[in-house]
Amino acid sequence: MGRGNKHKSRSNNKNSLPQTPGNLKIEPANVSEEFSRELAEHGDVKAKHELRVANHRKKNK
Image (cartoon, rainbow, N blue to C red):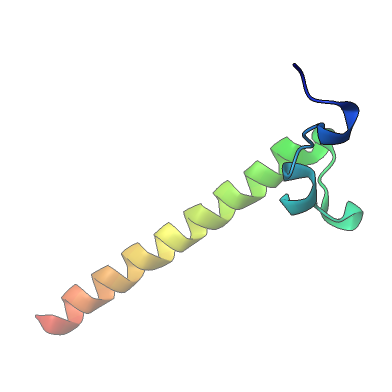
């Protein structure tokens, strides 16, 4: 015997998965621009780190 219509299983994921607010979504056309900005920022951080390391070496001589 099968179950009746009363016992249909429902997905629990719909209620628990977080949703991104509309104002925080990135349009597909702007995704590459977003990555470019992040990579540029990473390059700046790396250059600053190398400068700090060089200054630290010079200071400790």
